Image 1 (cartoon, each protein chain N blue to C red):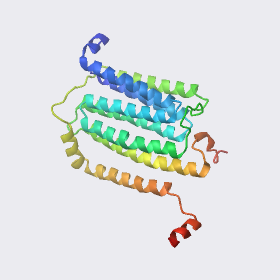
Image 2: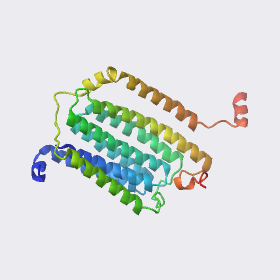
Image 3: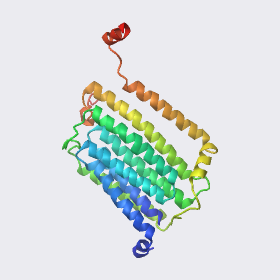
Length: 101
Length: 183
């Protein structure tokens, strides 16, 4: 196995995430795209860990941290989306124009 | 290494068998016209990513990913979809009308990352199977060298939990508070 096949797979998943982030209107689906991007980053971390074979397993340790922070991010993000929905009866990003000049 | 050499390794067949469905599911996450389908495709994508981690002999991270994403995050997201009453059938308005510019942007990003990493790691190979399990070393690292970041991340999680409850909680109206006091 080469490291490049994992990096390219990660790049493809990351690009899908970027596309979804820009194209989706529903805020929950935007959050879904962010999760996709984080998964792509995790693939890179684990693949580079396999390539470098550090004695301290740095790549996997950081993957654990990324997964944890991603879980926290989903919790907070959903709470904010819930709050927006409660106040504005809509969870679409393009209808949140209150602060637009 | 030519493509013929690459495909001759059996482990690369396993890689392709995992990677291609994962890519398809990842693509469907951002293009599905049904909110619930998009969330379920994310489950499949995360399953594929976990399988790739197993291929790289990172079994603890793989099962942690399955537990946290498939077990917890997706349930949370499905709750979010249902509570915000997103239309659960086919909905053509889930994505905006502007799709060409984001598509071009994403393609350009993919090309840039691929080009840069081909330049940098084009010939680097991986050790497929390490000796024994990496879980023991990972656990030892988490409680020795990385114990402070580990604790900090625990506090972040606690803070997020409390913050999430505080933000999402609905304050009682005076009438409801009165009723609760009476009972």
